[in-house]
Image 1 (cartoon, helix red, strand yellow):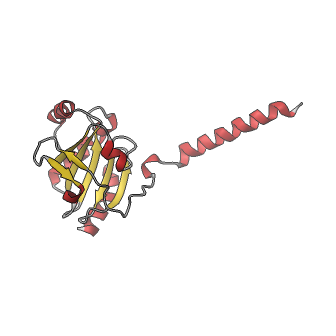
Image 2 (cartoon, helix red, strand yellow; image 1 turned 30 degrees about the vertical axis):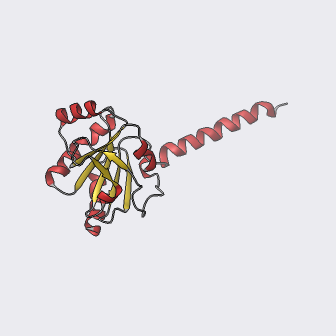
Image 3 (cartoon, one colour; image 1 turned 60 degrees about the horizontal axis):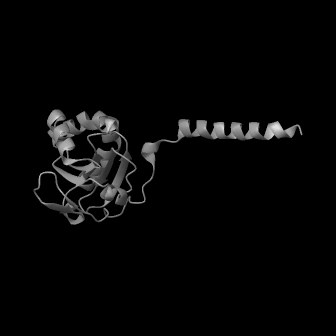
Length: 175
């Protein structure tokens, strides 16, 4: 009878230890992607500007690119936005934005207010492209080489440290 209270206490302690471990040692931005080293998943979507009218996986071939899934409703996207603007101004690489689960009018208004760092914006209003790319939520960023192969995935807002330590070396090695 004495152990009847001891078992739930052990279970609660074990769950607390597991939770503490996850908080201290598991970083969601480093979730591995099964797409690393593989060609970008197939897609065929329209663009915000209408030029070109459609954009597909084949259009990614030719130069290294950054694909950034973002949305006007995404608070974390606003955190990384100034860095993307700086990268676009410095012309480091072509940044293609994917407007993820958003409306055309909302993203146009947001980009008018804050600036547009993207060389092209693809529309993914239903999240189908994002689902095929393994996107958990915005923002998520992929780095592709000139052959359209995914070399890196970052979950969450990009920082200058992420740019310097992870993305820039990949782009320099692959260009």
